[in-house]
Length: 518
Ligand code: NAP
Image 1 (cartoon, rainbow, N blue to C red):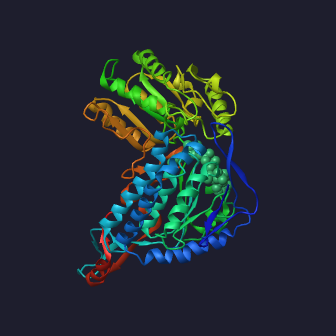
Image 2: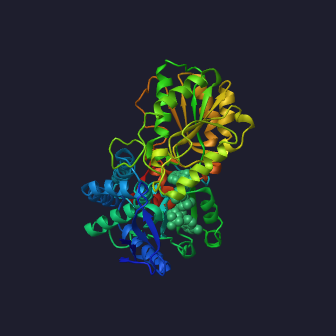
Image 3: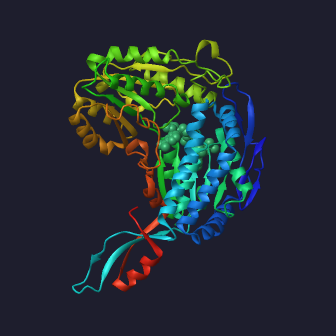
């Protein structure tokens, strides 16, 4: 099968055979994708002109209804998506659900946000400032849809969620999307977009898809366009420094990798409920999606007196997880997405090995070492995190994390910040002071901070799971980007202008605007 691209209102194949997509459990080729020879500049113009114009005539509520219709199409076809996620991404049912249902759930959430903004097409911020002595001249802030296209480049680990979370916010904001999934797993994005297109629920040009390497998309950017990139820090740098990106003034947001930390609080000891909850969360980090989540726990900070007990509990937990082809439903840890990622992960573990000791895993399980891209759940221990560099810098994009000791909460925070800026961190603690200090001191280093205490118990959404209500992105090496976060996700796609005028000028604007805070 050869994947096509939905551009300029038509499904179009690239000129060459292109790259192979494989089943990572067997190494078998399952599809090809190629975008060479496509008129990508024309495709961007079509999206901008046709799709953008269509969306901007719709109210927020109508755009919300459009997303709901898309979510319904995907829900109807869900069963086959699970198969594709297994065959092309090596997903277990749980892994596939995070990607597929995460995408559908985010569409539904943004659909509701669109409905809440009603029949308006612009957003007026509450409050005004008087700018003259007499009360006849004021300023207010108005958000309007940018007449551009949102170029959305995604990583291989979320072909569904990654695509839909970006499309959802752009659509409500009134901006068409040019989605560019990572080639390795583009089959699922392709199939979903085919179903949505066939259902005829979205005007032409609103959703566009490029399957293949997409060279040339960046060259077509204009001043009203944006690029939302998710992927490795290296590719992020290439995109950020692309001459057209720099020259055009297109907005850019980068969601890159990070070496996220979790902290077992200084007040938590073996036998406590929070101790077990933290072990459980680390177990998930070493199994779910075979550790291929950008928000995954990579560093585990434990009070030094409980280090042995904690590592023993984690090793005992993960050594019970069956690793293998998810065609067997008992499997808990599937393969990485392909042999290249397996090799990258094994190379990364070898690099971490210079500063840390492998406690369990560290290689492909012997019985599976062959055509499949498996890596056993791997826990390393670094005894001197203050004098280490690699454990804070190398993201092994697989089921791998490093445990390290700390001495007091201030020390834990210092070590966590050595990651240089991360997408997510978590703290398992009932200690009010530890929580306050963590939020205040580690806030600038993190896009999201999960605090688990006994009151919350198991009723949390997890260290790695991105909720559409919360901002996603992180400072520093995590790319400095921000997506989602409810209505905040619309900011990338809308322009805020200070409008200066009389009270009657504002009355006219207010009639067509929703009053909200983005
Ligand atoms: P990647 O190699 O950086 O690729 C990401 C995307 O960029 C792919 O669609 C790729 O297309 C495209 N791309 C590559 N070179 C490009 C160029 N010169 N111009 C335009 N697009 C280009 O990352 P990956 O291997 O797919 O994903 C793994 C990484 O993503 C991990 O490091 C992970 O931490 C990170 N990640 C971050 C987040 C987040 O939200 N922060 C989420 C998921 C993953 P092709 O596939 O066609 O080459």
